[in-house]
Image 1: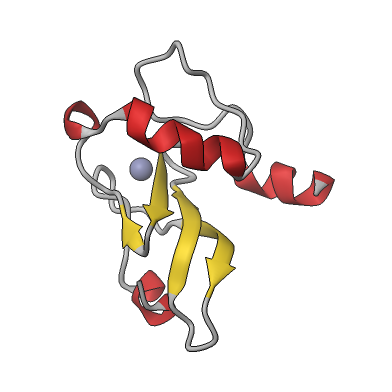
Image 2 (image 1 turned 60 degrees about the vertical axis):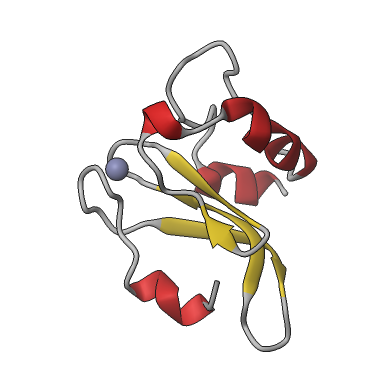
Length: 96
Ligand SMILES: [Zn+2]
């Protein structure tokens, strides 16, 4: 996805602005891998193969997303049904 699209994206649930952490970006500012995070409802939306996964919770397959999230070093509560990060992204960046 083009980095410029970030300005237009908001949380599909509460319309809050999203935070982003980029893991892989091409020279022409296409984000290939990253994660979006909603500070309001704390949901995360991974960007995998350049596609932001922003479908409703019930249509998401956690098992498909987990390998990418683990590779990115993100901690998740896998037992919970919700799509929320264990730690906020900002905190993670500080440790990094
Ligand atoms: Zn939200």
